[in-house]
Image 1 (cartoon, rainbow, N blue to C red):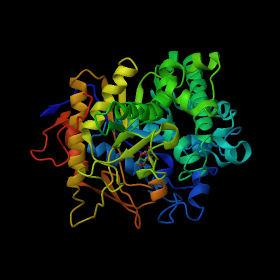
Image 2 (spheres, rainbow, N blue to C red):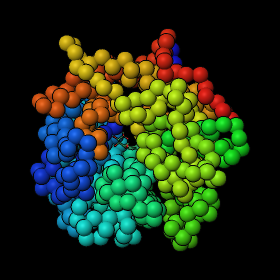
Image 3 (cartoon, helix red, strand yellow):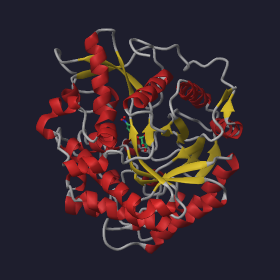
Length: 478
Ligand code: PNW
């Protein structure tokens, strides 16, 4: 039996645009994802989040499902335009009530809400009128929106996540253009990220000055990072892997813990990388109470400073490759999920240790980890052994990290249910609950029962044979 600490937090995660639907209901304003998904050519199956999982109407049943599985925590996000239709100014009382009722329902079932304030559905008005995150003034708008949330929900919500994955917003939204708002640039990602970091800092300052003493909650940001393993033992590849991690997680982690971007980014990005004023640096440094991490995969990194970088990065998760001078590849021996993301559990263990070392042993919550597989419903439910094997392997890696001294305190499985997987539409299923989109029906996958037992027992008996629990691909670092 692999046993986790008694106070370890177990939950699942979702995001507003991916599950709610009700895009024109209850006084909600439009978001940039409403506009983006309705733009031809952006979503692989031409779908939208107009209805999604219809959680906007089925939320009580969904909470009941969680309760029946014995889940103790739930991470969801608030749709900014649902409570502030134009992004600033007047509030939408129906929207405020929707999340208030959801929070009450969760608490009534003994489920602790973890609330993400920004999971990508920016009010469209702020995009059209202010140019989204490229405008430094968005930071004030976000602070004001966050303040509304603290004021209305902070009596009951004690765990706040300001932003989900600013790396994805910046790179996929402003660099590669595959996510909303669909811009393509080598400079804008750095500007958008800069505004987001300032917005986070201002929201946290507000929370700490006006709410935290009374409400006694904690607040942080969620960043995503894949692991980068040097492709060979050559020192240039080791340096390339480190550089890739600094461009991925250091981009946000360093300002949060050290007050500035990594030196290697400053050197390579030059004037395209904005600068914090001394006051901003002081505001952002130390501005999170925990380290929120989303993790999905690993790639090999090799130095590309003397060669040519393939312009098309596999899986689109390389960032701006030219700035990093890193070439990413996958080991052909690795298995992969339906996203094409390699399954490398030891990569998570190494990443957790990297964070622990670089940022001085922070409390870490894995706010997302999970996998998509082509799940097919059968006679009695959905058999998803692959997902169970994935979870068995990644949770073993988490446990190893804890044993080695990392302060990992919680795990949120992505996702509670199948949902709108952004540019992949409904073609990728991440849930432990299967959603039949034609009828809205929810079906348990076998992983839901597996996870339910794990939460009950605070641990699990590892599979005797797990193809994903591979021997360490240790190439150069522990
Ligand atoms: C995360 N990448 O997105 C999000 O937080 C979720 O909303 C999403 O459903 C989940 O992971 C699965 O994709 C990511 O290209 C999207 O590296 C893309 C990347 C990483 C995370």
